[in-house]
Structure formats: structure tokens, C-alpha cells
Amino acid sequence: MSKKLFQILTLILIVSVLVSACGTPEPATVEPTTEEPAVEETEPPATEEPEETEEPEETEEPTEEATEEPTPEQFTLTILHSISPDDAKAAVFDEIIAGFEAAHPNIAVEVELVPDDEIVVKAETAFVGGVEQDIILMNYPHLTENWIKDGLTIDLKPYLAEWGLGDTFYASAIEGYMTEDGQLPALPMEGYNWPIWYNTSILEEAGVEVPPASMEDLVAVAPKIRDAGYQPFSTGGSDWTGARFYMLMLSAYMSVEEVNGLYQEGGYMDSPAAMEATEQFVAMRDSGFFADDVEGLEFSSMNALFFGEEAAMMHAGSWSYAETPEDLVDDIYLGGLPLPEDSPRDNPVMFGGFGAKAVHVTRNGGENLDAVKAFVHYLFQPDVFVPFVNEAGMVAPVKDLPVDESAVPQLFADSLALPERTELGGNADSIPAEIGDPWIAVANDGFIPDGMTAEEILTELDALYE
Image 1 (spheres, rainbow, N blue to C red):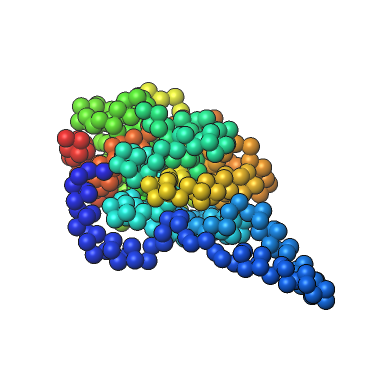
Image 2: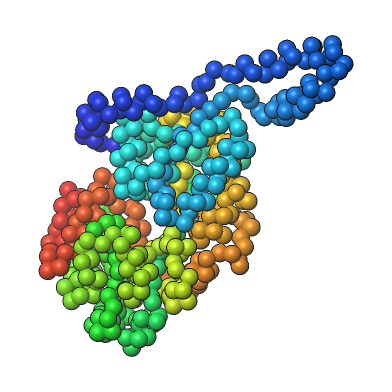
């Protein structure tokens, strides 16, 4: 975290943190209850009167059961997350919290929900005031890459073996989270794939091949789709969804190594491929390829447009599979973004990996490790974790799950064919943390019709790296 951010947040916290801290529970230290000694004192009187021996026997059973719990100490576990109530995972997560509290009566869980685009500021603000939650469930990488260094979170690599989690995850999921210096910032919780969704019914009505064979064919279908009475392509030009589509455009025009280098270090204006991709993006914008008022759309309105069968195509991730209306599922083809003729790629591109939701343990969580360990163990038990797959269609980083193939959302099952149809684009999460949000803002400005030129977009992106 930059010194400037600490200074700004400290000024903000002069009032707000002190107020919020008043209601914040102590991390783990609670005075032990005196109820158990009281139970032990009642045992002698119970044996003195034969007529009442049955009552003490009834009280002994819960006492004996209670001794099976490892400790009478009471803990409070606090969790900050961004699982929206509209997300299919929300109901599963609520059930897991309830099940955990039932299985661990000595641990109370306090959960706070904030939107995806606010969770980083929320977490860092709380950290400056010393009142951050024990666990943060949020996406990794670029927004959190400095958290261990800054002291907000702890390295979890030592706990993989210590907590018996070494064989829990796919190796690729753990490797995707490891830093260059061998630290593990978080435990992967959610994988994802992020394809292009094609409404075959609308496209066939418009006389369009499904999927379009090339980038040139994709662009050419927009007038036909509009003539048929539909919007061509739905994405959120005012949030991260539209910015990621532009990133996918860049991935279609260059190799993984080249596009990852741009994301990490800049140099867009020096890349002929980046210029070609951005010129195509601008031409698509100004020719009506994107849905009307795309510059005002965001995640929810983008989905609503496609799910309402008003748009023929959409760029959306696996997190939306379970939300798809049942009567629409059979009309959806999942694929990649078609390639331009001179692309170095072999197949249409999409994003994918295990960099979605992950379990970050904070500094305060490090002081409350008994409760944190208990929650992590419970969460990653196969029978506890599997509803994320069976009920929410989540791509899981956890091995050996008892998945019910007949229960998973159909689109999730359909997505298993994506590796044969597509290849992965660059790692859009590798953009440096300090310019992540400004990068998205520049890309969003690029969606304003008849606005910035390709050269202006690339120049503004390069300026972020200076």
C-alpha cells in the first residue's frame, strides 16, 4: 500500500474508524464461561437424594457431550466478502456459515458484505484503523499483491501442510496464487471461465453463423442482428466487465507473452498489435456493434439485456451460469472471441483460471488462528464445499468433490467443452495494483460513442505506467 494511500485513509479514519471500532468485537479473547464449574458443583447433591438421581443423569449427558469440544473458550470470527445476494453462490455461502456455527458452537461468525468495487478500499481502510476482519473473501491478484508486504494479510504457505490442506487443491490452483518469492497470499476458493455467450436462436433468426468464424465475421453480423430487432453485443461499458472485454480484444491480436508484458509494464503505443486491436475496438464501438448506451451498462444491466433475450451475444463468466433463465439455456452456445486473420493464436480466446474468490487471512486473523483454522477446515471439506458446484455451477479448485453431474447447471456442464474450442487469453489480473482501477477507467472511457481514438486510448494507458 502506498504512503499516499495510508495518509489519505488516516485522515478519513479520524472520525469513522474510531466510531466503527467501538462496535468491533475483540479478536479472540473472551473471558471463559463459569457455567461448567457450576454443573460440577451440582453433582454431589444429586447423589445424596436417590429420588432425584434421574435429573442429574439428564444434565450429565450434555455435560459429557460438551467435553468433546476442544475448548470452552468463545471466539468471534469476522469475515468480509463481496458475494452479492444476486449471485447463485450467496445461498450456498449462507448455508455454510450456518452449518459452521452449528458444528462449532464456541465460534460466532460476523459477516459483512460489500460490493466488489469497494472491498479493497474497505479492507485497507479498516487495516489502517486496526479493525480489519479476520478473513477477506475476494478476488486475487493485482489489487492485493502488496497486502502481505504491507502487513494486511499473512503468508498462508506454511499452513498448507500444518493444517493438512496439502492435497486439497489442484496444483495449478495453488501455483496460480504463489508469488515470485514463494509466498501464498490466499487459498483459492473459486475458479472461473469467461467465454463469449451466443444466443443461437437470435443469431439464426438474423441469418448469422454460430459462432462467427473470424473477427471480421463477428463485426459484420451487427447490422443483421439490429435489422432483426435485437442488440448485437452486451457488455458493461461503465465497469470491469467492459474493460475485460477490451482486454480480451488485445489478447486476440497477440501472443500470451506479448499481452502479459503490456499488462505488466505498458508500452501499448509501441505495439502494432495493440494499435490494431484498439482500432478494431473503436470501429466496433462507432458502428453500433455494442448494445445501445453501452457506456452506461454494468454487470447487472448487461446480464439483464442478454437474459431478457434482447441481445444476441455477451461476454460473461461462469459465475452467471446458475442465474441463466431455464428457458434460455438451450439456446446458448459458449465459445471464445473469434480471431483476426493475422492473429498468432490457434483458437478463439477467453479468460479463465483460479483467480476468482479466495480466502485471505488478515493480521487480525493471524491473532485468531484457532477460529480461522476451524473455518478453513470446515469450508474445504468435500461434502461442505461441493454445493458451490452442484447448486451454483462454480468452477472449483478443490479436488475429489462428490459432484452430482445431473444436478449441476447445464451451462456449467456445457462449459466443460470450452478447452477444446478455445485457448486462454493473457492474465488480465497481472496489471499492477496501483493502476488497476485507473486502467479500467480508461477502458470504460473508450466505450463512449464517437469518443477517444485508438491512439488516445493507448496513450492514456501508457501514461498510467509512468
